[in-house]
Each structure stands twice: as structure tokens, then as C-alpha cells.
Image (cartoon, rainbow over all chains, first blue to last red; front, side, top):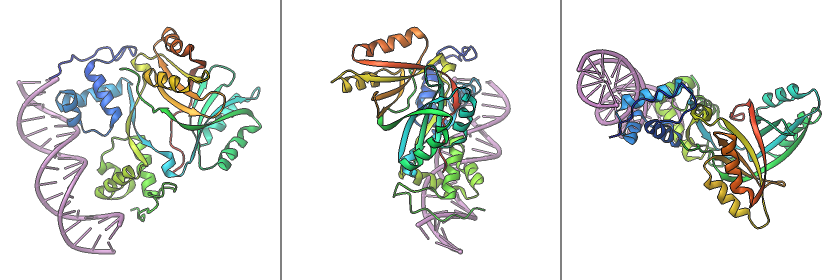
Length: 159
Length: 159
DNA sequence: GTTGAAAATAGCACGAA
DNA sequence: TTCGTGCTATTTTCAAC
């Protein structure tokens, strides 16, 4: 049995999780659809306790939500690429809007350095990739690197 | 009520989803913990049908799993960065292993271009970032761009 | 954080289209 | 085939402790 006192540190937003919460988050990361009762078994607590902790992790902002890991290749998106995007002078916001409006950009971070945006692109074909980049071409300079494989699949940092 | 004929195209691995599957995947993406009965309500089918479709999407490889979206800043990881990594000659595999062994690298793609790896790094502080990059420094050249914000939060391409 | 009871849900077998 | 109905077992939730 695992006895862990309730963390008061969630609100500070800067601390580490206690052991029970860490185990809960790790378990949910490997399968977000685990039932509360099974989750309870895994962490050695009762279901209501675990349920309450999950609720608290949600309202504390640690858990933003639960999502599905979709293999885009299995639904026809054969090509993934990372695109660095440098808007021409004065076109930063326009370019950002264009990126957001193109659903093939499935992720985009604003970063420091020469290229303000780094976006993940998912397309069916090279032709489609070209179509998407064409939209940006008169407003930004882009550098595209096709993804050949994965060395580290998305994972959580140490909890 | 939604009548959609069952897709025979899942096995081909290259096709698009039928409307029911698309709605199921989209709904699960917004909340992977939806109950089958609620999911059934959302897509206008019975719970057993939806349940079977989710099972099939899993075994077809479309759904790889269900995960939790954790806000790493809420657990003390204040800094995120994208790191381009170019191993020195002959050190490609060594560097890949070093990346995989460092849990602060929460994602790493192998890409085309001058820099073979593009990794996402999550750390508590600049000092920790330096520590992590130091490990690579004698085997690779790295270019680090700190993430200032997000333009597009991770999302699915059109289904 | 735990226990126990009521309500909701999941999973299975079956029949219908 | 795939979808829907009715059943039982499990799970979730809420109460009280």
C-alpha cells in the first residue's frame, strides 16, 4: 500500500509531483484510457482517491487533456517534415496566420534564432508538400527537412 | 442517425477514414477518456458499434494508443528548446544513443539535411540545458533554439 | 484516503438489415 | 459483414467515516 499525503505544491506550478501523482501520470501516459479502478491497482490506492487526484491534476493544469496517438501514415499521410520558416520583413503575423490556417501544419513553435517558426508538416505526397509551401513562398523563406524516422518517440521527462 | 458503411480500406493503410471513424478519432483526440456510450452519442451510433470501431482502429494501426497531454511547465520544466544535432564523422550511432539515454530529450526525429537529428528538449533551467548539451559537445555540433511560444498546438491533419 | 451502495458503463451474445 | 438490443459484470460516483 502506498501512502502519500496530498500534494499542496500543485498550485505553485513549479514543483515536482509526489510519487503517487507521478505514477498516475506515467500510467496514463502509457494508456490514457485505463479505468480508475485499474489505475488504482497500479498505484496501490483506492479508486476514489485516484479519481480525485486525476481531477486535481487536471484543474492544476498538469494534465491538459487526454489525446489519441494517431499514426498519420496509416491514414494516407505518407510524408512528414519539419519546416523552418522565416517571414519576410513585416510579414510575421501574416505568415503565422497562414500556418495556422493550413491544417497540414500539425504543430508550430515560435523559436529564437534566425527562423521564427518551426513547424511540423504532414502531407500525402511531395506534390502536396509543394502546394503547402507554395502558399508561404511569397511571404517567407522556408527550409524543409523530411523526417526519415524517429529516434525518440514522444515521451515525458522525468517526473 | 449516421449510417456509414464499414471501411474495408483500413488494412491498405493508405486511405482516408470513413465519416464515422473520422468523427470517432476526432472526438477521442479532443478527449481520449470519453466513455464508449458518450462517444456513441457523439457519432450517432450504438455503443457496441463504436466500441468495435475503436478496437479496429487500434488493430489497424490508425490509433497507436491513448496518451495524456502534460504541461511540463506545470511540473517545473520551465524551458523547452529545439536542438539540431550534427554528429561528428563516425559518431552518428553513438550520438543517437546519447540522445535516447537523456530523458530530457522528449522527442527526436531523424531528418534529411545537414543536421541528422532534431530533438525536443525540456529542462528546468538554462544550467540544466547546458549540462545536457555538454554531454553531446564532444561528439556532435548542436544548434539550440529556445521555444518562446506556440503558434499551432499539436493537432490532427484533416481526416 | 477508505469503504460500501446506487447509477452508469462496458462487454458479450444474439438477431436484424 | 456491420449495426443494434438486452443481458450481466465491472466501473464510476457519492455518501459517510
